[in-house]
Amino acid sequence: MLAYNNEPDAQSVVIGRPALPKQFLICDFCFWSASALSIRRSDIMECPRCSRLLSRIPLAKEEIYLFNYSPARGVELEFH
Image (cartoon, rainbow, N blue to C red; front, side, top):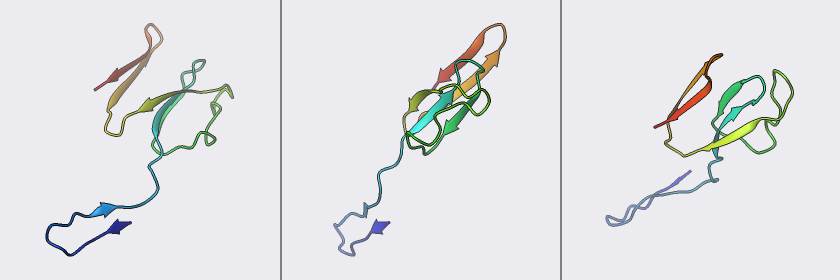
């Protein structure tokens, strides 16, 4: 929702609910992973593949990352 004022020196103000935090979800056992763009703490708790609890890494609003997995090296996350 946007509030707008017609006065020349006035600034627009964005009004609405606070954004839910973005998170990178990963299973420490089977390495299933996902980017959660808007998640509540109760939305996804268990891995859909092996039913174990997921690890969560919070992501900044504009944060970019690369994910790579290989059997020899395991999981690699590179943040930019």
